[in-house]
Image (cartoon, each protein chain N blue to C red):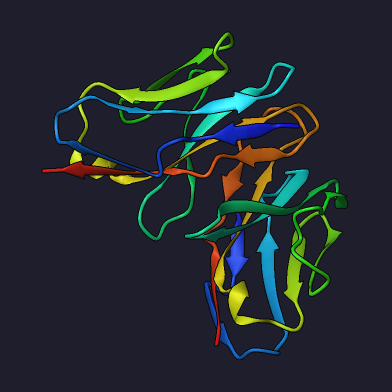
Length: 108
Length: 114
C-alpha cells in the first residue's frame, strides 16, 4: 500500500536560516512525488514535483530512492514561507496520497 | 479557466440536517477527488472518481456520507444526517487523467455542524 510520512508536525526556524521538511514514502514501484503548500485559509497549491522539476519560491527536493525520501529544502527561509506543507505521492491509475503535513513557522 | 469551483464556501447547519457540497472540476479533467481536512487528522481522502466512476470510496467515514458524479462537470458530496464531528474543510480536486499529473484544488467548503 502507498503511504507518506512527515515526521514533524511543526517546524520553527528563524528568517534567513536553512529549512528542511522531511518526507518519506512507501511504495514498491516508481511513484511521482509532489510537495503542496497551503497558506492560511487558502487552497492547496503545487509547490514542486519530481518528474518535471517544477519549483517555485526557491524550494527544491531530491528524490532518494534508496532511502525512499523526498525532503523539501530551501537555503534561506523567508517569513512568507510560513504555511502548511504536504508531501504527496501518486502512482499511475491510482489515487493521490498525502502525508499528514508539517506546519512551518518562520520567525523574524 | 476558473479552476476547480466549490460551493458553498461556508456552510453552517444544525446536527441532523442534510448537507450537500458541490464541485465543478476543470473542464477536460477526468479524475475528481474529495478530501476532508481537520486539525486532528490532516488531509483525508474520502473518495475519488475516474471518468465519473467511483474507484475508491474506502475513505468515506460511514453510510451517512455519499458522493455522486452524474457527469464530467459536476460532483456532490452529501452528509445525511450531519453530526458535529463532521465539521471540517472539504476540498475537491481534479486532474487531467489517471496518470501522474498534479492535482488542482478548489477553495474548499468550511462546514460547521452545530
